Amino acid sequence: MPTARDSERAAHPIQVVARRTGLSTYVLRAWEHRYNAVAPARSASGRRLYSDADVERLKLLQSATRAGRRIGEVAGLAREDLVQICLADSFFHASTPARPIPDSAPPEVDQHQRTCLEAIRQMNPFALEAALYNASVAVSVQVLLENVLCPLLHAIGHECRHGDMRISEEHMATAIIRSFLGTLKLNGRVPHHHELTLVVTTPAGQRHELGALMVAVTAANEGWNAIYLGADLPADEIAAAALRTGARAVAVSITYPDSNARLVSELRCLRQQIGFAVVLLVGGGAAGTYRRLLEEIGALRLESLIALRDALGKLSASS
Image 1 (tube, rainbow, N blue to C red):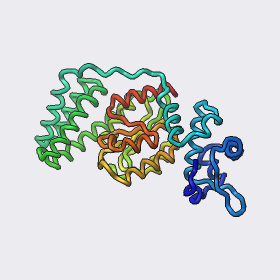
Image 2: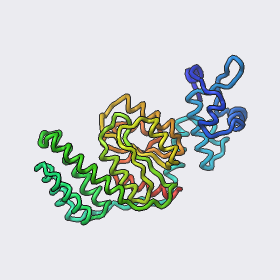
Image 3: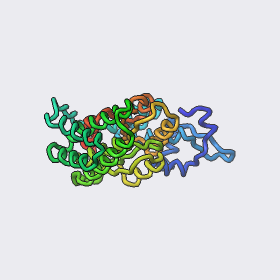
Image 4: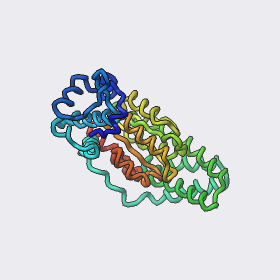
């Protein structure tokens, strides 16, 4: 329930709250009187004034009731319990079984990775382009992303950190791989239907986009309408794109740093603006260090592209 501090910050009249939550003013009043769902403050003239916490709680309750729950069963729950319920309803209740992890990748993938890495060390963009193309012809998109490109990017990062690869070599490789992934994205499957829309980007301050691009390619290959927005995007712009396109989910990639107040604020803001009807997927090298935050805002942390494909499969089944 709202705290005294929330009440002091209350500023939203009921008409604004109705637009933000999708609930009618009649329902808002009924939930207040019958179920004590929220307790908005009052102005000097007696008008209801809702705090940000009130609005968030109403969005959670709206999401829970849309999933089939009765308002009387959820109105008295704590915020943390509501978050878990909404996350479960939007994702974990999907019936599609998880895909088995392949026992091993085709033996030639290691050679493809080595060929790409050697082309980077030789500062030869043409050889790198050729190596990536040959790999794309030899193996599936899934294997290419998970068993060639992911290890290649890890190897590039490792060599850069230890001084074994120059910054110029890393930048050349990044440019070629970015262009290659863009081509893969364009060549993805035709979406099954536009209800399966995924918005993909990186939050403000996150400029490394290759992970996000691989997410977009994976989603496109799974038959989703993957809308890639580029990198370094503020939360309000991400939310606007998701709401405008009717996205079922938003995926963001975070790679650095391990502790950043701005990133925390951006992710909180993003969740507040997209609501809990939109699934929030978060991956990338730094995602694990924000585990508590992601649990708090009801985001699903993805540790691999395999986990992403599992999540997309379950969301498809629940749509």
